[in-house]
Length: 272
Image (cartoon, rainbow, N blue to C red; front, side, top):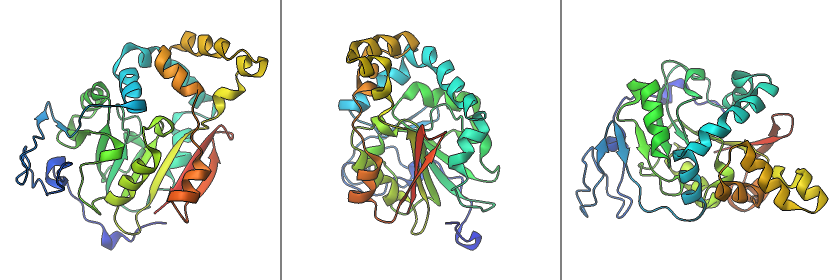
């Protein structure tokens, strides 16, 4: 699924110059206000803002990643990846599906504080989106060269122009997006024709294998995952996750591939 290098140009434009208005779809042309409808798109501390009030799962997820619960839980996430052979090996099970080219402009949806950035080619120009602003601030602290290329936005409403990126990928968090089909449609829209779109996460049904569910006492699992660090709302959402990757492919992504990763405890979707 590699893209020919001749079709790729290296860009380091700020996100606002590649974006369109969420309200009327007019090109922003690098402005902090839509020239057509006047909607504001401020850039503060190097982060481009294109977000409105959060609802549903996105509201719960943003509160989790913006708050202290994520930092309490994060050591467990890292321990899980170590069991899969280490951070680099676990993440490269997904990143290997990116194009094998020297230069590219790519978008990571759910970039967090940038854990995948050091595994990407140095000549790539990376843009990032997240619904948790504190994660974007952390990413910018670690990688100040991304100033202007990080966007506070929802995956279901990406502010970018059509066919902007040479690859679009999302690693982790997709299970809990508010609208999976809408997020996928947006990721495909902003990818150039033929560009890979990659989505990976843990198996959505992992919570059903908890001891509490097996014993018929699901409240036990709720207590346990809260003990690990999840806040109550996010823990309840995780244990009640009904997302089905195969259903998403069948109904919204013809031709995409579904592959197991992380010792079959995770999945990876790859398509165009």
